[in-house]
Length: 534
Image (tube, rainbow, N blue to C red; front, top):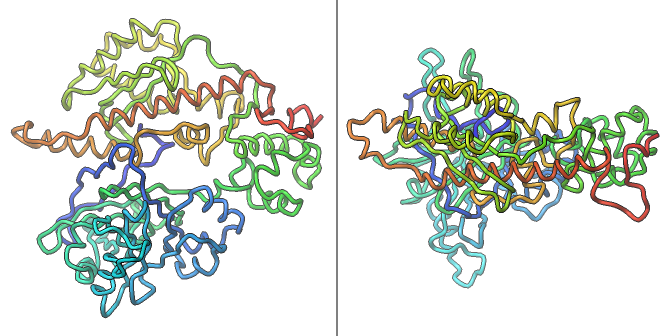
């Protein structure tokens, strides 16, 4: 699934050039069901400028194995961060590595100083543990994650080419064997940046987890404000990077609560969404500057966040008929194809999943098979997607118009329904959703859904497919091109449609309740319907 509400595909350099030969390669996919080590890349500006409660709520919700101080102002992270047992790592600030381990010592996380006299000895000591009876020593086969501030992006705005600065210096600091086997993360590269280049005859992959100071020129500025990033590293070297908005946590994560309203609520004794959700409605309405209507919205949103549930705010019902859930995988944000159409017929747990996948690049057999299935099974049933009116449905219509125009009228007659639009936009919105954003996965996870595939998103899937298609189309013998793990990619799409079905069930339950009511109840009766404001 690749759309505006999802993580955009990772980008490599603007073009080739600079240090070595950079290349766009297929990302390494983590093993199915594997757990990652979680790093929170935290800019010093966020730690300094956000309210303490917001930062605490973010750290508690994300539960990282370590916090990495990143620009701007990385030196302020340790000083301003509330006391925590989570290690705070500061790449480049010390003369010897800081290390920590994760996943029962399966992953060694080491910061690499910008300058040191004895990096190899120190790093090897950290890697091997040295003290054999030390139960915290990483296993000999532990995967290494190297954190650095040294490797940055150098841009030539005239040739629109990019290169990596100081890569040779960084490589020379590492012990033998680390360059080609470790995961290398730089806080001087924009979060989500990925590239593979060659050093000393070997290849090295780098992932950005911070912010670049490079000026890309008009139209390609890469110096937007820095947000935290959740970095997940798997023991096979796969990495996922997700930008995180600090305003999505604590009181700031409640709809219509900005910093001023959050301060007003804190002064009144409400420090988190649970406090707001459980408050007597008239007390919120009486707070200076809120009023009844705003207090109504805020309390409904607080209940959604506090209790991880869908809270009704409108009176519109969901469509009748058994829904068919759909999700598509494409080759990017402006797709030229929908190479996989995932369909779930039934509920989130026991529904039947079908993957209509492209046989080879350019093949349209899967599109025809999907349309034939819909022709036989879709009569009178809503075809449900998430953000469907802005992505899935127009993309599929374009594909049908290009390749199967005889089905176009039939497609236009089928009932297409965007669940996100119904939740958020129809008649001003019908429910408030839980989760730290309105993206599909955070909402579904808040409702208890757990994915089978981890460490990939729509951007990574698009990148894997596009790299494969590029290789396939550029060779004289396509049989020599190694295929992606198609089953894994299809399972990711299955996760999405089952997540969608999970949200549908929660919305269906909410639509049967009075607006503002929660499934949670209290003996005091302070938590009730929006009518309590009258």
